[in-house]
Each structure stands twice: as C-alpha cells, then as structure tokens.
Amino acid sequence: MFAIPEQFSAATKNQFEAQLAVMNSFASTAFESVQKIVDLNLNVVKSSLQESSATAHQLMTAKDPQEFFTLTSAQAQPNAEKAIAYSRHLASIATSTQAEFAKTTETQIAEANRKVMSLVEELSKNAPAGSENAVAMLKSAIGNANAGYDQFSKTAKQAAETLEGNLNAAASQFVSAAEKTTTRSRKSA
Image 1 (cartoon, rainbow, N blue to C red):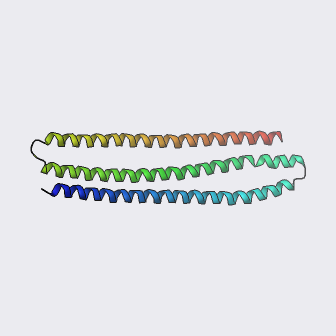
Image 2: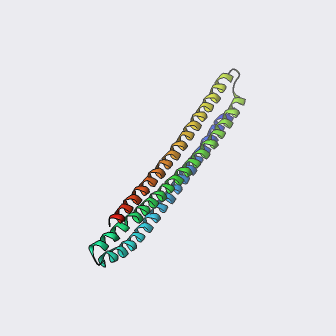
Image 3: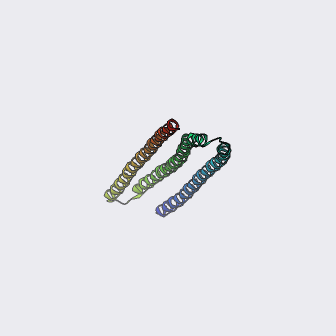
C-alpha cells in the first residue's frame, strides 16, 4: 500500500538528478561554444592586425596615386571573403551548439517519457478497480504530449536548416557582389 508514495519519491528524485545532468550538459556546451567563439575572434584579430600592418606598409610605399588606389581596390575581395569565412565559421559554431542542445533535450525527454510511462504502467497495476478509464486518459495525454513535442522538434530542425541555407545563400550573394565590385574597380584603375 505504501509503494505508490515511494514510487513517486523515487521518480521525483530521478527526475531532479536528470534535470541537474541536463543543466550541466547545457552549461558545458555553452561554455565550449563561447570558448570556440573567443578563439575564433582572437585568431581573426591577430590575423587582421598582421594583414593591416602589411597593407599599410604597401600603401605608404605606393609610388603614385594610381598604385595607391590599385592596392586599395585589390584588398576589397580578400577582405569580403574573410568576412564571409568568419560569418560561416560563426554560424557553424552556432549550428553545432544548437544541435548539441537539441540532442541533449531529445535524450532527456525520451528518458523522462520512458520513466513516466513505466511509472504509469506500475501505477495502473496497483490502481483500484474502475480506474481503467483514468489510466487510459493519462496514457493518451502522455502520447499526445509526445506527439506534439515530436512535431515541434521537427519544425525547429527545419527552421534551423532553412536559416542555415539562407545564411549560406546570402553569403554567396555577398561574395558575388564583392567580386563584381573588385572586377569593376580593377578595370577602371
């Protein structure tokens, strides 16, 4: 007779421990993502400083205004390509972080659902006569919640894929525009 409160207590304890594990996983993933972004930014700054110094030296040693403007326009496309590469790398970090969060969430939800269904099955064995309809309604509600989550998860994945595709398309268009501008600048120089 005292099995039901003990089952709820054990289930609550397990759920609390699982939530702590998920929070720890999220924090770890977020920290790794921030670390990747910091590393990316440090590399970009270091590279940018080195390239800016070399470019400034070239511009200062230009023999005439024509050479100065030629050197200036020659920097447009490589700079645009570097900005695109940076954006893509940043988007890659964000996408992988989002995927890791989704994976952790899906794993947690699947495990929680398994435990809840196990608890409901156990409770239904000890349920008093005449409570079959209530147990069936509870199982149906859990099934409906799972189906709703699955649909939400699929929609979120599609949205992330669409966003990534749009970012890549925009980056490609930006590179094309930069190439056209650089080509025009070279022809007019």
